[in-house]
Image 1 (spheres, protein in one colour):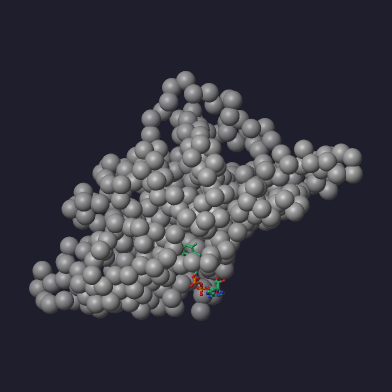
Image 2: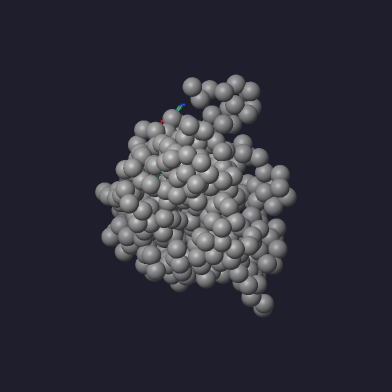
Length: 402
Ligand SMILES: Cc1cc2nc3c(=O)[nH]c(=O)nc-3n(C[C@H](O)[C@H](O)[C@H](O)COP(=O)(O)OP(=O)(O)OC[C@H]3O[C@@H](n4cnc5c(N)ncnc54)[C@H](O)[C@@H]3O)c2cc1C
């Protein structure tokens, strides 16, 4: 992503959403990246999102545009990837999620999950084959870990890959099922995590491989402008080149999940900020009992509580980003950010909806759409309970998962 010289950053400072001037903690380059993504959200997501959400479609035409914007595999180096910092990636996630969590989820699944798995654990040939097209948004990736009976506890997965023959050129036969897999029905490549005789391993399964069926999950009340699928693997034959050579055990998928969870800590604050701004604007125009809703103390308290949590959550995300860029971010710190920021964002989106009254239950306004989306966000990439258990173990030394 280029640094567009001459772009005004002062003009984009928003006093009402950034009382603390957190913007002043960002470099000029970081603000430039943020403004580019904010412009994209305003021009390409906001105008269409109500329709996509109502029709339950993900606008696939955005994929190459997001590639062009430089947000796919944003933090990865080489192979056509943008190679930006963790803070820049976080700022992009925040701006995209101010548009809709579904679009930020697309970027997370593509970049933080599928591309990170290949970049971190793939062979040189695998990286050359898949990453440049994925960075450009020409090819979509999916990351298949969750199963119908294995969600919070992926170690209990039943999908199994057994050796097909013997010797170095032996391939694999994959059987099993996955659930809730983002983008699987439109993906060119699936990163599939499966149990083997040697523990959990990762496999790259190209689209169209015989025995793979991906079926979009319908009737969703959340994340409607995005795709999640059930997948079945029925005696799927894979060559030896399908194996991600460097990933062994659950550390393989977990390291990718940490990347996505980090982005969510930022993204949730985007949904929260957009909800707050929608409620603030409405409260200044809507007259009841002879004056604007914003003029009542009860409304002001709601708005002030929102801005307090948005500012604290944004500072928290920025702190995580600075730690990550310094190579010092630890998993329990990511858990703290994801747990807190999604929890607060959900509360803010719901409270914002109350200010909009009855009008707030339509797609004319964003807060209830954000709230519905954030129900998914609190569930995927580790539920509230899982992150609480991770932090509980960290502070007490006592694992309470089972
Ligand atoms: C929109 C969406 C997109 C997704 N995208 C993907 C994707 O791309 N790839 C992928 O692999 N997965 C994806 N997922 C799946 C997601 O990661 C799982 O839903 C999540 O891990 C939770 O698993 P589960 O739904 O099976 O719930 P369960 O694990 O069955 O949990 C149900 C409830 O029990 C609680 N619980 C579980 N264990 C404990 C415990 N020890 N103590 C107390 N409470 C506990 C949970 O916190 C939760 O509240 C997606 C999910 C959604 C909704």
